[in-house]
Image (cartoon, rainbow, N blue to C red; front, side, top):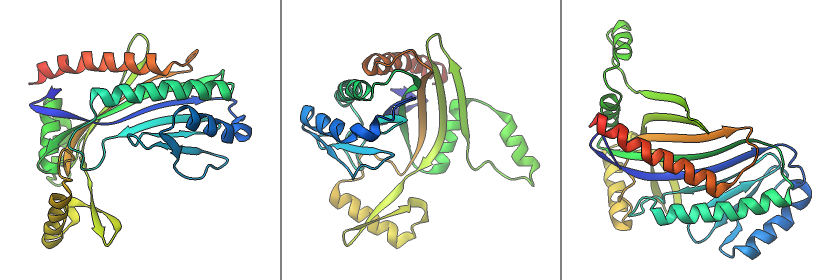
Length: 267
């Protein structure tokens, strides 16, 4: 998807359901984990469950599940240094797993009252620097003089970062859409220990060392150090029921139909 002259990278997906009266989790957590791992062999415990939360991970693609007495959520993120963004095949697999496993959790916890269902997707747009990302966002949003005027009033300062957010109500769900510039953390491998450091905070020699590591491990790929990030959260509050496949598929359809129309007006 091309927006304002830059190609999108599908970076992360999350499907979340919140509910009331899910305290059967305290009694059935272990049996639910066993059933998930028996029905979906690629899934295993990520860490030890506790009274608040049970974390699982899919060894096949890194998809994660957390479930407890008040909510569950599934997430899938573009691996650091992967050559590709999340593909349609990745998204289809995410939907299939979320649909099957969420149905199992709904049934085993006897969930009837839901307070929120949401599907969230992040797109990133590569930038050379954080300033470049902010400039792209300014062009995308059009001429909004207020931020420049107030910056000028504050001792002739300049705008360092822009963050735009809006909530839109469609006929059957709401969309919270935000866009801002982001800077990734560099993952430095120090004798087997991973140290997260902001890229802009590295001095010249450290930056050279990072680039050497990235080239050796082929981790540059499509994970830019600086980018514009488009975050879209599609949600319904107090839904009558939840169907993961239907909700995610319809949310994606509405998003994918709308964004190209917007980009044509922007470009």
